[in-house]
Length: 346
Ligand SMILES: Nc1ncnc2c1ncn2[C@@H]1O[C@H](COP(=O)(O)OP(=O)(O)O)[C@@H](O)[C@H]1O
Ligand SMILES: CC(=O)N[C@@H](CCC(=O)OP(=O)(O)O)C(=O)O
Image (cartoon, rainbow, N blue to C red; front, side, top):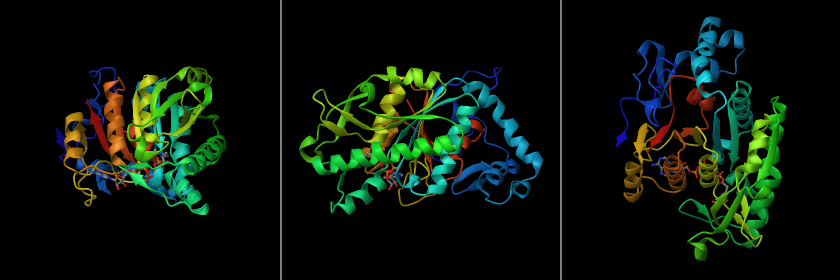
């Protein structure tokens, strides 16, 4: 099943009086009245949310005070529903390029943590790896969205993801007023890897064979935000490069996360990847498999949809691909009655 319109992404009001949502229930509530929402970059978002979220102007002029407290008030039932729940957020790619956007995404993550959710951040850093590979004269190569990883590339991937990007994100979380613990898959054997089935052409690209989330539980319980770089080792200690979307899905499943959210640089899955207006609001596992088979979903979108399907099959309640370039898309997705992007259902 594939829904492009009408817009079904409004979240059901999560009051205790309403039926408990199934995996897809977040998406099927009545669309907002047009007076309270408008289209923005292909998304339906409330005018108040847009005003509060998108403007660098002083807060006093961004929206009338009443609208701003309306937004806050709207968040209450969502905070109540998701308090104490684990949300795995994968952030990476082009959506991570701008330092301002990075800081904004991290602030949203810290806000979620402050209101009682338990975020776990799994990060990529593909563009940063590319730029460091260029410095050592290596041309990046990808097959089906995965980086061809020879020994030199593996070394650069580990240095950039574990040494640089991970610590940068930990620092940003600190700056935003929370505390984070940076890890990679090797730490406490969080992720164990084996060579991918296409090892002959992909080199040291890994598949996850095991997730041992025991190291995450005390970190999360102490109120720290785990920040995970997706480099892992096999039994012999050989390092592997794991696609960050894939790893996020496996981690979300292993810790029984409520939500898996993949932030990327498009508005979600597009029915026609050349038409930004063709956003698919909701699609089930069979539907995305068909889209891959028909060539409608390609490149880096393949590991994303595959990991969402696997995560849902393993008990994660909802998996969504959302636009990391839209200011506050994380908050719009979790704390308002409008969804953004594409929700994948079982
Ligand atoms: N049907 C599709 N809808 C949206 N994006 C698609 C689709 N098929 C392929 N893509 C590509 O997938 C990309 C997202 O994957 P990727 O670049 O790996 O993201 P990230 O770097 O955020 O992990 C999009 O920028 C787009 O080029
Ligand atoms: C195997 C593989 O492709 N690994 C990815 C790991 C980082 C990643 O996933 O980064 P983004 O989320 O920013 O794309 C890579 O080397 O780019």
